[in-house]
Amino acid sequence: MSNIQGLSNTFANGGVSYWLRDSGRPSVRSALTGPIEVDVAIVGAGLTGLWTAYYLKQSDPTLTIAVLEQEFVGFGASGRNGGWMSAKPAGLFRHYAREGGHASAIALQREMFGAVDESVRVANAEGFGEHVDKDGLIHVATNPAQLTRMRSNLKSLRQNGWGDDDLFELSPAELSDRVRVRGALGAYWTPHCARVHPMHYVQGIAAAAERAGVRIYEGTTVTAISPHVVTTDKGEVGARNIVQAVEGYTSSLPGQRRRLLPMNSSMIVTERLSDSELDSVGWNGAELLGDMAHSFAYVQRTADGRIALGGRGVPYNFASSFDRDGKTAQKAIGQLATRLRELFPGLGRTRLHHSWSGVLGVPRDWSAAVTYDPAAGIATAGGYVGHGLSGTNLAARTVRDLILGEQTALTALPWVNHRARNWEMEPLRWIGASTLYSAYRFADRREYETANPRTHIAARIADAVSGR
Image (cartoon, rainbow, N blue to C red):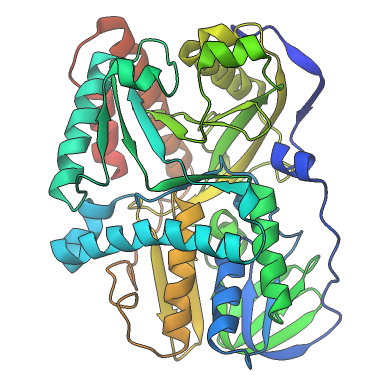
């Protein structure tokens, strides 16, 4: 295991996630027992589906709502993610500003800021706020090219609605007061991010929805979605409105194999750090940490004193396949372990406790969207590309307004009824994804080796091809 001295005696690979292992398997909910009729049928018991059910019930308690889930609450990305409740929607100004105008894109950004605060508010109000800490997010540059990108990113953000209260540039010395990252040349901090324990968080929302009267059916496989009807292995569900909220699992539905690419994201988490290890890192707050590399790493110091680090690893498997249990390829574990050691050399003897993987749904233009067809009664939401902990909250409130027929500031946002083209057919999809991420990893290596302040040409070409 490159640069890390092995695995703990209790190391686990897969099993959904460390978050599930830490929180314990939730109580099993009953499966659907036959055909039913409801006002709203929601496919997927992840954050999008559960938030939508919660807000619909808050707005209209008389609605009958059923959430249909093949496995259990939080089985997918909602229970496997890195615990970043961040507020920067992917592709914001490249796509949404072009479609809806600059002011419209800025409005979406402001709503994403608000989604973080709203999510924290509900968590506190509904009794699971102890698993949410809003200490913000730090992005750090660890070579000259990353520093150039960081400053360019700061300039772009300031031009596009981020004010003095949203961004704070940190010198290496100021960064060191918060967290010690080897080779840091600069950083910036934004308050618009919260650390969460993903499984406690998603289970908290599920419990809040159930208290409001929402029915959640686990162990129920949806095989098709058509106007006003959801077909399952346990019977048909008739509904005035249907919400498709399956994100990375969209390819499992008939006719939707190419709509979202199921991208693998993998994580490792260490054993609990000793006092000396914690001191070497100097990370005492709940800030989240990310780098400016093309193959981006996302990191958190967990509430129980571990370091959890994630990245793309092996980002895409041929024909959209993935391990449902979340087992991580040894190659990916080694890559993540190496990055952990590069950022925090004081953890060179720290053992790994758990590794796991999950899939997120990536649109062809890397831009999340909410759609609604009132004639068919079908709404969809997803494509958050790493910003789902906050994006799901905003998407759910938007879906609520669309289903209730209300014209609000949310229904006017530029991601409403935004549609990206489908991904290419295989083998082009696999060749393209594999080549792009090879290019990004190559660019990262060369940027460290050469110390050139300009982004490597391989990454610039990959960005142009991928539409990022």
